[in-house]
Length: 117
Picture 1: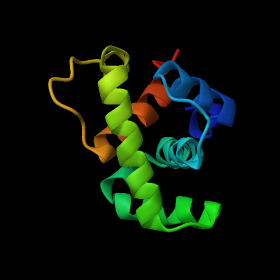
Picture 2 (picture 1 turned 120 degrees about the vertical axis):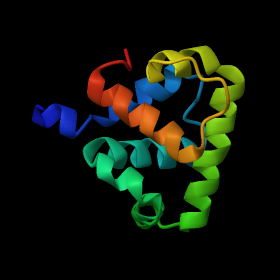
Picture 3 (picture 1 turned 30 degrees about the horizontal axis):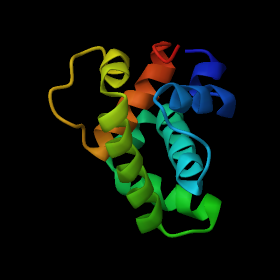
Picture 4 (picture 1 turned 135 degrees about the vertical axis):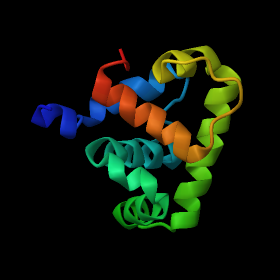
């Protein structure tokens, strides 16, 4: 892996989220982007997602519950509006809405594998 794969640029993550139909009009977008970055840099964090939300919360000076709620809310929005694109990123047809952790894993892995484009 190259260092770039281990540390995706914020612009790459924002572009990924824009392609899923999300917009940067609330803090939720940035909470999700930062959490995806953490997951892409250290995929093992997805095994214990309770570590992801507090770290993002510290970065944005909010609560882990707020970060978790924002990730969940945006994953529902993507499922409703960008299901096909999300399935493409996952590399499989998603029959049911992914959990927030699975959603983060799909986004992080698509960045790492180059499927975000």
